[in-house]
Length: 253
Ligand SMILES: NC(=O)c1ccc[n+]([C@@H]2O[C@H](COP(=O)([O-])OP(=O)(O)OC[C@H]3O[C@@H](n4cnc5c(N)ncnc54)[C@H](OP(=O)(O)O)[C@@H]3O)[C@@H](O)[C@H]2O)c1
Image 1 (spheres, rainbow, N blue to C red):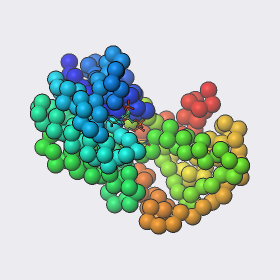
Image 2: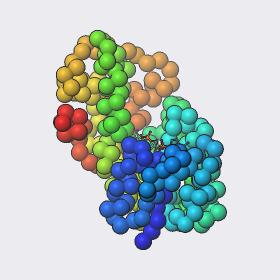
Image 3: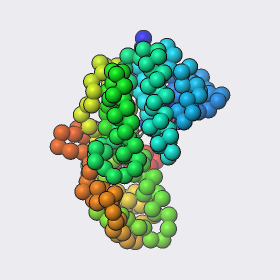
Image 4: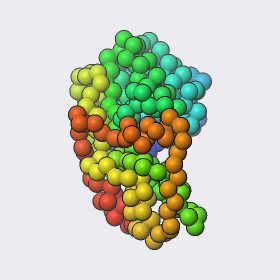
């Protein structure tokens, strides 16, 4: 039985990845910064390197899902700690979850994701990189934040393609069980919709319907989102349940 370390294994995606790996018969270890981790978890901090060697010792495969708003420190620099440990212990496969459309996207978080991809690609460790569109949970969180006030400010002409987090987790678990495959086919949700539509759909489900005001977002970042760089391209694969299904079954109930 393979032992799989899941960085970010306590996060929104990572928890589902741990469950999917276990369901496939893997032994899992979820990394957390918590210094007194629960059973099945291991303490490690990618921002300092604390505990990372110990977390990686004895592991066959790593599924790397950790992320933090201080992404240069944690996602980029933290991946260097992880790769150093993975080299040291001869890890056979690292699976990284990334984001659709980040190649030339000026959004700073997306640039950090691309830099992290490159570190993995150039590490010499056999790898698989899966890019996914925005999780349904993220779109709901954005909609929740935007609908708090009496008027809803909507970035004009932004679109999203919310993806089912379970489908992303299942794909990552499947990839972790297979051979390293390099960059694999992007995945995303079955519907690309305007952010205005997604927010409105959320608002009607939670009974928070408000007047929307379209705000043009200036600059390169606004232009990149208006151009739909964050959406699945023609080669992408649509997976999982729709956003409407998520709203009805996961938000309303
Ligand atoms: N959100 C989206 O729509 C989306 C779309 C495509 C891809 N992704 C990617 O999916 C991955 C997971 O995203 P998510 O939204 O599930 O993240 P999340 O819920 O914010 O979870 C972040 C995880 O990272 C861990 N973490 C944070 N700082 C750390 C540090 N210094 N050292 C070690 N671990 C640390 C946290 O563990 P503790 O708090 O327990 O320490 C937690 O488990 C990310 O790589 C993200 O870029 C996200």
